[in-house]
Length: 226
Picture 1 (cartoon, one colour):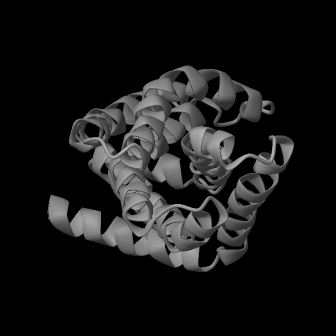
Picture 2: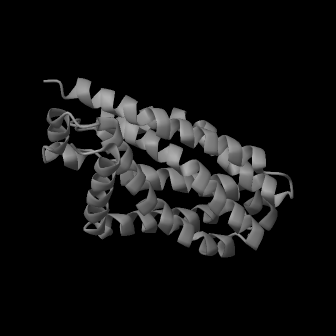
């Protein structure tokens, strides 16, 4: 009988191999993020004060849209290849499988964004401390974003117009993360304490990681009951 830890490790390893074979998708997400970061400020007046005011919101919106792009098909391929049906028939711990899948997806997507943090800091004249806080806030807040993206994505399994459905479900749920994530960087720019914002982001991510795999599993069972 396979244990929960062995099941998690097996699924974790499987997802890493799948992502390594789909590096083109990851490259597209990184390019999309860079394009948003580079081109969006061009629409603003060329004043450093205005740019520093809006940069936290720009970064977090770019992160949200990049994650939305990468997670649109997070379950679709497994659905089309019959993997989800095998999960349901096997009787294995479905929330655990889902959590492992989303965790790998988060790691694969957040690491390039963290590596791009120095470029973002140079573009927006962020100090080393501000760049570090930006990276820390992304680590604290992006898990919740990806779990919410996965929840929205599972509703779109087998739906032709799933992109619009995912956006309608996701955007209202991510507003608190956008607010607290951008506020953390804003407070850092002003030299104020940011621990409360990071704590809130971490708490939301932990709640999402603890409860949303069960919600996603329930949606899968109901949606694929037939």
